[in-house]
Image (cartoon, rainbow, N blue to C red; front, side, top):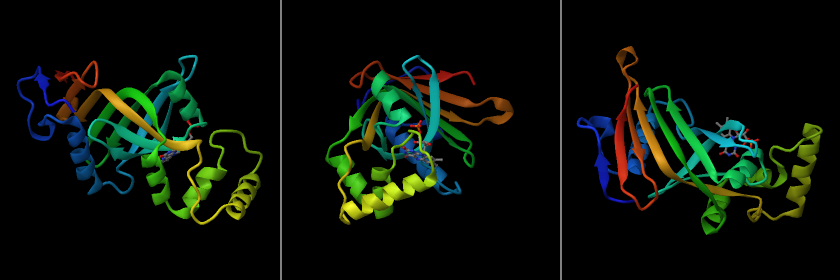
Length: 209
Ligand SMILES: Cc1cc2nc3c(=O)[nH]c(=O)nc-3n(C[C@H](O)[C@H](O)[C@H](O)COP(=O)(O)O)c2cc1C
């Protein structure tokens, strides 16, 4: 990440302090992990289809890298096709117990190399078979059809199945990250981090609630 931050506010401090927004997201998630009943890394993922119609669903944010966010899915799913079509996506993390929100907008590329292989291999065997058997987001006549495909997948494969080429990671490189924390009487605190390109310095602006 670029070390340079242009801060347009005069009072950024406390939970909003720092010059690395990726570390800040990690820190906020770690705080939430102590109190959230489950899935502190769950995020809403927004995409648009070819007609510009928005779509949204939950995913699990698996990796926060030095300059990107990575999650895993089926490339042929609705979200997969929408991301590959537009090249963009947005994430929204919300923690009810800490009353904080993080919004992320960015460009997206596939992570379908060794990193995706390693993550796939780290999953429980049942989940690995499931990822192979599910034609995510396409019509299914009955649950039995899915179970039959799962069983025949297991018969055909070893205990170390390879990652299917239609399943892997998506890497979001953000141009915008917004940190939001609840304030009394809806006077919330918001700081928007924006940069035109991954090499540009972050421009940080405090926003009205
Ligand atoms: C808590 C939670 C976590 C989920 N995590 C993922 C995930 O990491 N990847 C994924 O493909 N779907 C995940 N799903 C399922 C998606 O919300 C969605 O139903 C599925 O991916 C199909 O979406 P699509 O038709 O828009 O592609 C998760 C759902 C929930 C409720």
